[in-house]
Image (cartoon, rainbow, N blue to C red; front, side):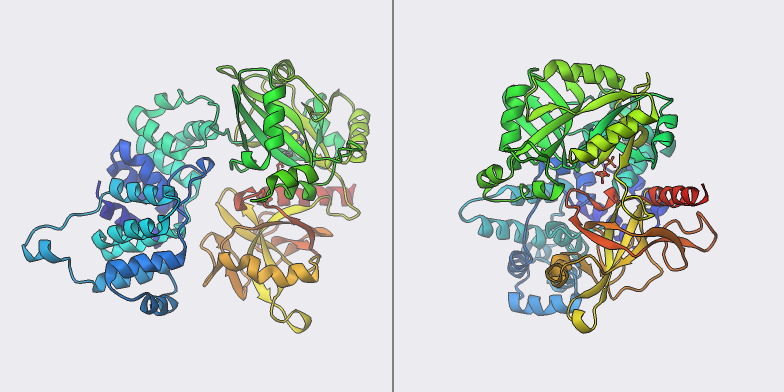
Length: 592
Ligand code: ATP
């Protein structure tokens, strides 16, 4: 398939922010793509070459790219640098430069058709660029990029440039791609859940695309858990009281400690161990100790288990707060960090053992399987739990969890239908966190989408950040707070630098805001915020019209808790639904 077809669609996609239009355009594009090339088109459309868990990125810096563009166009790097300032975007710059390029040489002179770029050639070259390393890698990359640009039309150049620099940003979420695939190959969007299920197990949109295009919905049923391929994690809903939890659970449930650490999905096959984070990044190299413990204590030859890793004090066995563990997320000096910040792992689920998927078994059976395959030790064991059937038992367990340094409890259904719901946040798991001395019961995780310039003491940095919750239904980020407190001076003055990579000229298309920020950001960074309460608001767009017409919800007196939620992506932020529920349960308490 010609790359020009893809570029045309990108150009149309860029012009709309309406999800339905995007879906229709993508459906069209997917139908035009031969199935064997669909994975490439799907990854490229998201600005990637592989699903995230593979961890291969193109990784080209702007400077290097400009050298390649110079080589392809004959325009000097200095001149390109100047022009880039004007164009403001490397895609626009490339398009302009290529449109001035005389049509290439001999072929044109002889009246021969010029060779057009194909999707495979573009993808294949980008793949080579991503993988070259060692001596001379920079020069090789420049040659590959220049080679592509020489053949590219101006419009193709616009998108090739953006993909190479990780700036494609068509704003297409995973669910939109699944909608389009369902529309194209599975009989309509109402069948998206079938695709979504397969995606939750494989975390690979390219694979889903190829399978559904070649073998339809039936083919998707053959997608099973596989060691080395992360399963999207099951998540918990929240409720504020033991009564509500027990009622929802039908009077009986498992209550487990909610450990304050990092989620880990551990995959083991023989001696090989891979660890995935909550966001499905491969974090194996940060945790050589966990790799070693998994090798030693998981008895099955092949297994996928789910758990939480916590920083501990080796002398006392005490659990330490989440921030301590984040010291382990460094690039270098892993061995030293491992000594300074030792960990323990608490396992709470078992998804796969020796060729058998356990996803559809009820929780108690999965836990039994977990017990069977784990040879427990102090630092590698099953999560603390009880089976609770009264409010008193739950409350007592909750106090115990807090006293032991946990955040609270996770109550889990033990009903027949308590399967592992990969990728879903549902009421089969309910979290119950520590209550703070305020009406707002617990902190929320919000996405930074904009900022307001500071004045006086804060001149030169931001006075407040504009924070948003995630509206999962509309796939949008809606504002809920303006937060300028809780930061240390040092943190405050480092904000512009930390946020620089996400800065943009205008509001991001997925952000819905009535407020005009001074600076806008691509939704990426998530921080934890606590406030006094949730109130109705005329200016914020979170939950607009849900509780009262014309009003949204806002967090009153929001304060940064000091936690950057590096482990969360923007779509993992607290959702509008959750904030509406928090608002309602707050009201209930006031009226009780
Ligand atoms: P939070 O911000 O509260 O950590 P989250 O959005 O990351 O929540 P939730 O589904 O809301 O995810 O809460 C479940 C999280 O709690 C899991 O992702 C996991 O990291 C952690 N956790 C700690 N102990 C347990 C446990 N026993 N069972 C399940 N999850 C646990």
